[in-house]
Amino acid sequence: MRKLIAYFLSFLTIICCFTIFCIFLTEKTDLLGLKSYRITASFEQVDGNTVMSWKRYPYPCLYQVETYYKTTGLVEGEPDFIKVSSELTVQDSYVVPPTAIPAYYKITAYGIFGKVSGQETLIPNANYQEPIRPVPIFKYTSENPASLKPYLVWHSIPDGVMYELELLSGPPDEENTTRLSTVNHLYATSQVFTNGLQIDLTPYREQPQLYWRVRAMNLRREPVGVFSTAEPVCIDDKLPVPDKPLLNSFDRMPNFTQPVYPVFTWIPMLGADRYEVELLSAPPAVENNTAPSDRKIWSKVVDSSFSCYDENPRCYARRYYWRVRAVDASGNTIGRYSDTDSFEVEPHITRPVLAALGDSITHGGGAVSFSPANLEYSYTTYIDMPCINIGHSGDTSATTLARFDSDVLPIMPRNLLIMTGSNSLRSSGISADMVIADLTRIAEKCRKNDIRPIFLTLPPINPDNIMLAFQTPTDVNWLSKMKAINAFIRQQPYYIDLEPYFYDASKTILAPEWANDGLHTDIRGKMLIGEIINMHKDLLVQ
Image (cartoon, rainbow, N blue to C red; front, side, top):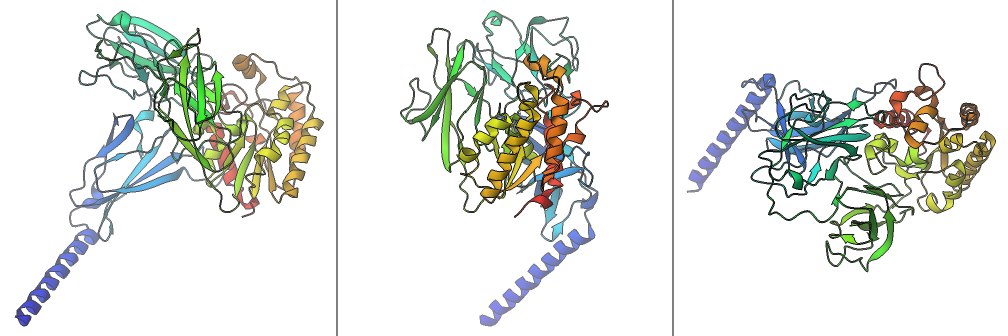
């Protein structure tokens, strides 16, 4: 019996070894022609997520899906693409990480003995293919109809300041266009400043068919891309109407974290005159109720239709919870509180290597309508190491100095990127010497607390675009002030020179293509700042 078992085990071992050898031979000699197999992918929206699907290899494989962003190509020595994430799956589909800028994906197939795919190509995210157009997130079909007052939501368009929405009684006269349809047109509005709204479809309840589409525009109301493909809307007037604000977390960048001064965003609600945001120490005892929570640690009423800036720094490690309710002109709550969202301030076991201190250019936001919660408009997003954002919108150099002790010292980074003074340039009451004195004090505080100060030179600004965006004048002497401040910065032991990258052809103002509003660089500008910083990591003390 023992001999029989021994023979059986020997035979089994031989079979296993032969099988493994065959697998090895198949993979290493490419007997199945796998290296010539080319993966193509398709994309669809499923429950608010973008799902990428592809045809399986004709061989059992493990798939590695890598996500890349394209760089600006303006910094010497940088690659064309940077990898931001990598995951493994055995499925033939993958929920791609949320993104607010064009992303590219590389799918690599692996067998038991290594890679079996050939030359992989980068697959662009279909939400950002040319000609660029908004892609609906919610689809209202006969199986999933809309109420009479649904939320229409789409993926945001990079650098789109506003949107024009059109309702139609049938397909438009032409797709892929920038103009309103001449046929089947019912209604249009351009008073949309974020990637969604709640809309009243009651006047169109008897329409046999209803379509909607939307396009992005810049500050001058010029088109950014084309109208989205007209989307049918099926209505069921018996469905309950949404009665709470919809939190806007649809196009967050991967690994979303709030800056030290958080910003909260939502989709505007019908009939709202203002909103009240409350920050909680724990989830509310009752979700989606109508009364404020007894766990509230801070609240704020805002007239803004879709965002709220927390004026308090959240420096200390803990999890925070927040929600928002809409209020009408009479002060009555509309419906209920929104769902509750949360964010976490991570603990620091050791001193963080890097933080960034400054005004709204550091805090984030751009294209007029995007806030610091839109991390694609923060240069810290593009630094290829963790960087704590201690920016505060509205700062002058004096207010940045004033909050140093309360905001920087609790964090105690080893290195501090410092860029402040752009708002000071705009004010005729603030001289270059005053800004330089503030920067000198900030440097002294850094050295006193064993923090390496790394100054960033101020980029130029564009007074005409600032006036167009904010209806505020700029000091006529801003350029000479900036030159003096940047000359001082270049005398410091550690600095990074941003100024030369951002001029127009005349070398006198910020080039219009860098910033819709003439002050806050948009996505590509913030990306460029991050890339320039990445090329100067030798300045950091580890």
